[in-house]
Length: 54
Image 1 (spheres, rainbow, N blue to C red):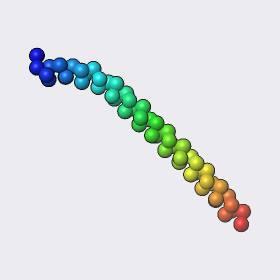
Image 2 (cartoon, rainbow, N blue to C red):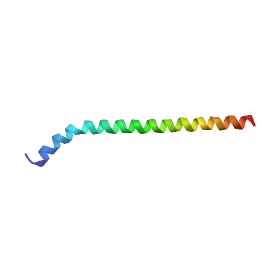
Image 3 (tube, rainbow, N blue to C red):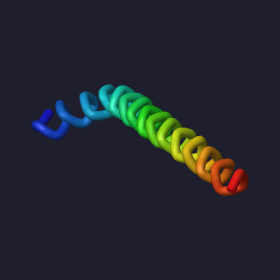
Image 4 (cartoon, rainbow, N blue to C red):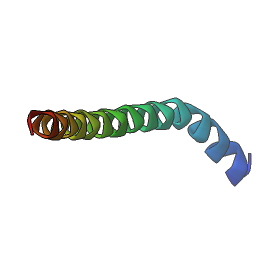
């Protein structure tokens, strides 16, 4: 077997782990962005309440 014959099965073995790591990273990014969006929305609500009081 050539070099490609040894690398291809290794690639197929590591591919699910790489995909899983990518999915966890993507979910982490979504969580961070969601937390930032929640904080921004709370600030907007606070400012809108201040405007309504005037």
